[in-house]
Image (cartoon, rainbow, N blue to C red; front, side, top):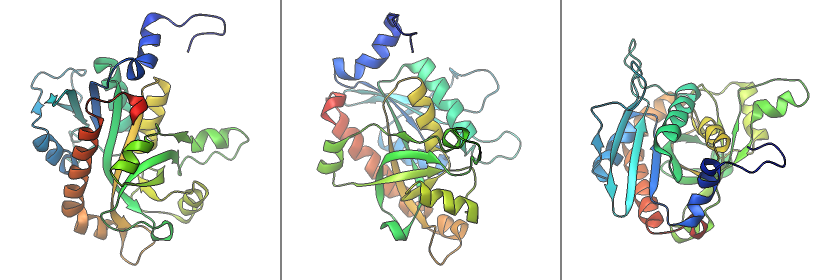
Length: 265
């Protein structure tokens, strides 16, 4: 942001203005897990980039291609080089979002993925939510003002027409770096008024807001956090079926965006 009284430079003006000045044409999709990303890659017929545009040594993977009138880049954080598991969580998602925005200058970020849902807020297995607000639930800093910084509440970009026309549910998202939920987390999640819980969204929202890129969040419910089954067991049980629902939702959202200005969403 330019200092008060100073005019923003041309690149800053372009980043803020381009979603309104012409139809959306350049989209970056951030997806944390290979299981979640693979169906979208196949559906949109994206190609893996063999020559990484990212710094040497990082495991991040880029898939790219053209879908209808849209230039699509899907970024998956890859696998931990030592343990071989997906690089889930806020650190990896923030890093890849920052790197992708710097390299690709997208008109729009889409963070798609699975999430836990709360039956008390009306969530069911397989539900697809468009996120209205993102916040953290495990950054507890009990000092005035720092407490608000820890929660880090941010609004997602508003897409009322998309939500209405595709008949999607809307809910608030709470993000933390643990799959389970401690009593302290639960208190914070309730305070965040969250319907869904994940491990990436608020970190993506932070970077997108920092760099002034519109962002929308598509979350598919794999497990009921306030239900009877352990979260990890239910997550694994439903992952394949819910990932298929997520894939369909992402395709529907991309189809809807095609040819539109951001203000039309």
